[in-house]
Length: 285
Image 1 (cartoon, rainbow, N blue to C red):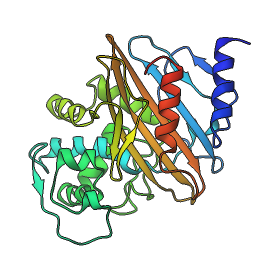
Image 2: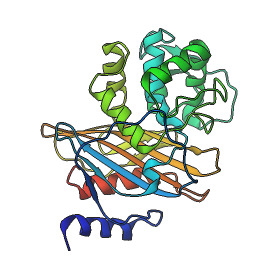
Image 3: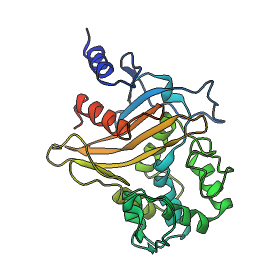
Image 4: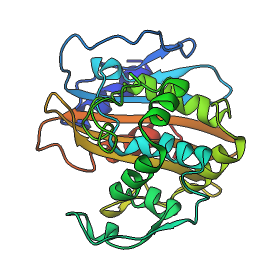
């Protein structure tokens, strides 16, 4: 059995939600086609994508989920932070928006937040305030400029990324991350570097609204992880879990997308666990 096939077999045995058959190497990262394709049917399963910057290859766990559009949930906070900074809706990472006491939010959200702390703690209400400041026309315009998934914000200004009309595939997430970390998005370069810094995680963990989650600690010396979680339910009723980001170590840089789609019993940490396992088995962490 080849090394790639053995890796895939171990992965399949270890993931109850995955329907993976092996490891496929794609010679180059294909550009996302426009107009975007609609899903043929609601897919359930998992997808992990790994791209080593400068190598021109994508390591892909083959599953139809990789081409299945679902809600981006809180991974949209990456482009939303760029929009907030680029439009001036928020003056910088330290701008505080006071918590008004309303809403049934996690405890970490029930306080005043800055843009930086709202990104790290995945504070939904903060970004809803940002959306109100940006407005419908500018939100829609940035989605088109970013070529972000189906670029559809019509379901509602403060909810379109939360199980609403905005949808994106794991492949499209990777395409967006590549352009983001290459500094090739149509926003001020300072906005991109600011958001890159805000995405950095504490050593050995990934942080979201529910707190810190172990992430294959300890990391090798000199390793940094920048990441954003996402969790929600899409329009088809599927539970969606995300972790997207970048790992840097020993002069190398890796972009990754982890996505798990299942039913209401899908663990909240499913995409985090999938990413940690996959990065470890690929020698990245």
